[in-house]
Amino acid sequence: QKEVEQNSGPLSVPEGAIASLNCTYSDRGSQSFFWYRQYSGKSPELIMFIYSNGDKEDGRFTAQLNKASQYVSLLIRDSQPSDSATYLCAVPDNFGNEKLTFGTGTRLTIIP
Amino acid sequence: DTEVTQTPKHLVMGMTNKKSLKCEQHMGHRAMYWYKQKAKKPPELMFVYSYEKLSINESVPSRFSPECPNSSLLNLHLHALQPEDSALYLCASSQEGWPGNQPQHFGDGTRLSIL
Image (cartoon, rainbow over all chains, first blue to last red; front, side):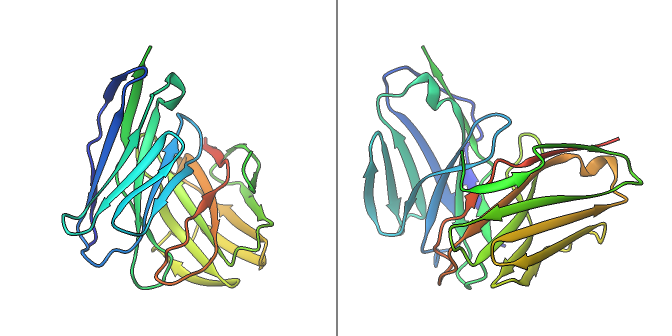
């Protein structure tokens, strides 16, 4: 049974600071990793995906992948109140069957 | 606005009603999905269609019946639902790829309430 674990939070970060969200996964063969943002009452929105070890930057967001340690993280620089949401880590199966395993999500609150 | 369109946005129905949820995408994606999401929980996969054929049914009760009329459309037919079926129902689509490394894009969802 593949597992994807996240700290459920809530994680409170002051406005302008860096928010760091972490995700660990159990399947060492996992190749792809997705971060979704979900505002309360809304649907998940893809914000980052990463396939290779190291960092991937997109605007204020940086995804970091360490396959040896089986963790993937999301950094949000210059946090804004609009970043307050639940962040879901998702890992696809390795069998081409399009299944995603989601973590339970981390609830992030940016404090003005 | 998302590129996956779901209708209706809200639906209230009785336990004896029959209704359908609709999903449409025009991104040329070849895989489409139905998820159920309860409050404060991650999305829970229900069905996957790949190239218009049902490829995954996650042991969903038969009161939920999916249909994929063509590569752009996905329906979820509902009949004799229970109050515990009240949830946000999400449709998603993705380019099919190996090893499942194509991200899924979600619609805005249908908020379903069973009376």
